[in-house]
Image 1 (spheres, chains in turn yellow, green):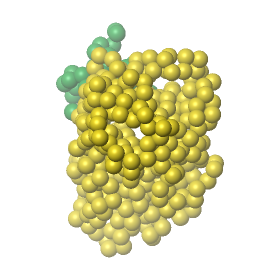
Image 2 (cartoon, rainbow over the protein chains, first blue to last red):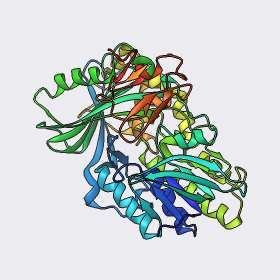
Image 3 (cartoon, rainbow over the protein chains, first blue to last red):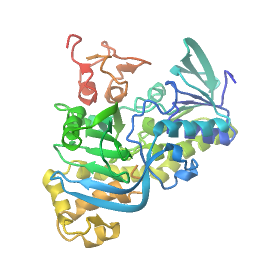
Image 4 (cartoon, one colour):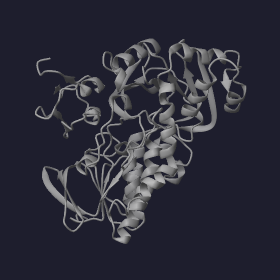
Length: 396
Length: 58
């Protein structure tokens, strides 16, 4: 099981990597997946929300990785008023550590060879159109030859840079985020809450994603361009002090989330980037788990097909960007076009929209009503927010 | 620019916003290559853990 040659080497074993690996292997490619950490899924740099639609195409739904089932999104405006938006089944709050490992388990059952604590340090392109990857594993240097490299190495994406792709993000296109898992609190387990306002999270939002009746992932993301003077953690500490003054913190984590359109180039000769590495994230909500899985399926199938045909050039891999564009790429571009309207809205505009629903009883807004009956306030903004957070095919 | 590894969470945000690829994250630490860094300050602004400083003494 320790071959020095594979068809495909996947760098990173998050959902992007493990789903790509799985579909490449399932379609006949030999696949090695290398993970830098001691296991997939840790550290959890994620609010753990995912929409449920279509998830069963990737994995059998299993209680082991579901912390909470979500049916309602509650949006708070800066004046403290809120409105609930309900959908039949909206999604889950995951236990990412278990979920990511379950995806790896599926990949391995399809023949993927996986190694953890394996840190890829560089690549060399060979004359025979193959690539050699170098990695450190348990204190020793290893090399492995392959035809296709999958860069599923997250927001840093060193792999993309090694292949000459420009993966850098502008400050306004990254959400600088901090999250605590809070305990000794009371939350409604089926509601995810979002808090907007320039004093709460400029260019972003604060969130409460319940993990049980007594615990939740509570975080703040601010657009990098707004984080110069005051950082996400100061905003979060103020938010927690106001909202859950008696909470304990059982987990603290920092993350950067790409909130932009998909990279213009997600393939190169012998390379495909998947997930955060390719900026395949909903640019308003920052949701990226399902997005990564959808991209991974396409990338894995494309990789296997390229291996079958013996052509790993950027041209031979073009199915991947083309199919991604149809699946979600175009959708993300649309979301990006309304991002500033939603996330940079003034407090006054935001307050107006909740006022508009003041007399809606019991403060529950059906989505059809939302679009039909908006007559005052700021219908364009509320419509955009609903598109982003609720009715979007894949908010998370 | 200088990264304090006792504060750094290795999240990679600084790497993503560095316009000149001067930052690298290893298994347990992050570092800025001074000879490449243009001192634009993006890393310091974006760092959610506030682990990036202008100078080592800070």
